[in-house]
Amino acid sequence: MKPLLLLTMMMSIVSISQTTVTLQPGSSGKDAMVVGHPTYANTNYGSLTQHQIQYWTISGSTMTKRNYLEFDLSSIPENAIVLSADLTLYGQSFQTILSGSNALYIRKVTESWDESTLTWNNKPASTSTGQISVAHAGNSTANDVFDVTDHVQEFVSRPCNNFGWEFRLQNETTLYSKRFYYSSDYTVASKRPKLVVDYILPMELDAYTVTHASSGESDGSINITMDEGAPPYTYSWTGPGSFTSSSEDITELEPGVYYLTVTDDEGYNYYDYFLVGRECEITQVEIQPDANFGIDAYVWKDKSCALSANSSLFFSYKHNSGDVDRGLINFSSKGLNSDTQILIADLDLDGTSHFNTYEDNTSTLYRNTESWTEATADWDNKPAYTLVDGVALANTTSSGQDFTLDLQTHFQYFANNPSTNHGFTLKMNDESWSHPTLSLSRMMFYSSDEGTPSRRPKLTLSYYVNGGCKTYYPLQEKLSHNAYPSVSGKLYVKYRERYRQGILKFNIYDKSNAIVVDDGDLTIEKIYGMNWLEIDLSSEGLITDDHYILEVIDDKGNSKRLRFKYQ
Image (cartoon, rainbow, N blue to C red):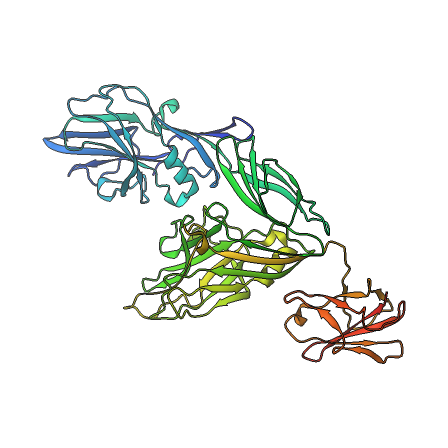
């Protein structure tokens, strides 16, 4: 084992948003050579001062040398966008070719390895997918700079995939070609392998304000502030009808969904959407986002580092191998707040290839309690969820069965607690498997990445914005001395959520405690899923400025009251 010395790392800010990281470690760096020769196949060369990549002979037998190199990239945020990554290897003076070609392949290693124990016989696997081809250099001893941007982007985004590189000759069958470089153990620090990475952080929404339109007007607005990425930004808005705008902030808005695309100076995009309503009115929208605006994925236990962000499917799944999959999905609730009453929040899922021949596939959609991103979600970092108010999906009756899920309770929670919208996890109720010889159960749906728009998940939202145009008074178990006014013959009442599902009976008492109006006489506009009531008393013969008591009785006989003044 090499002694651990301090890693040489330099970070500098190139511009407002771009960061440069330079990695050039000393003996703490991770690199080693392996030798394919019967005498040396079990020998470790983790402290060698050279990178030797070679096909030669020794004592009359052929010998193949490969080298492995890995950098610790933990100083770079996992969500970083790598603009460039240059790997510099410094050539040694005795680089000589007798015949053949010393053209190289730089391949990503796909298995872990230990510098202090690495040998030819236990060397890790590598992949030719995405390999970098390096041209023949003859007898040159020049330093080489390799563009490894795509590889480093993967290593940064998926640290679980960072096993570094394998360097091998492209031709390991023609003798007498080699390429030598200094290693991280070389005594001259400036000659050691160096990796220079330029990156920016992805754009993010730093702040936003949604102002709903006034009653009877189309004067809503959305103000946003972007951060990170590579300024300056350009903006593209689309909305109801033919609405478009290239402004950062938009005004004079009617109710509906407004979709935003922000592009930074490097050409990267940020996608989001916002909900605008109108005070004292019900707004209904359908949100069926495409791959850009949709947020859904699945996480895969059997391959914990695997990504499925661009899959056209998300699902709950279990297999006799012990594999388990869970689906993740999210819809924006930006614009909803505690003044918003959610009337309907129905999620339509288009089913495909459900399977429950051996065990049922009953599943539940749970509300997440932790953040996650589509681009980075995997089994190891999947979000936690709460069991409260889980939405059941019954055992399927056909392979293509569709589901409509009532998420009204959850979106009301998001409206009341805007920072808590982390979407949902779709999980099979029983993820254990009891039939070792049989295969699987799954519940599968199309995602926002599906090519056919009508199959993508669709959220139907109906919401009411109480913008101060009406005051809803809460029912009381014990009457106060206050007499709350009706407005133009209408009384606005807010009742507890437990009343939402049952049958409500209404009585109105006058000052002598006599019933002057009962539930058979009242005209009540009650909207399902809404715990605000508008009770029209204008045709009930009540006396202006007199005091009355409203009694509300639920289907279990519980009674609450409110003293009011008829106006």
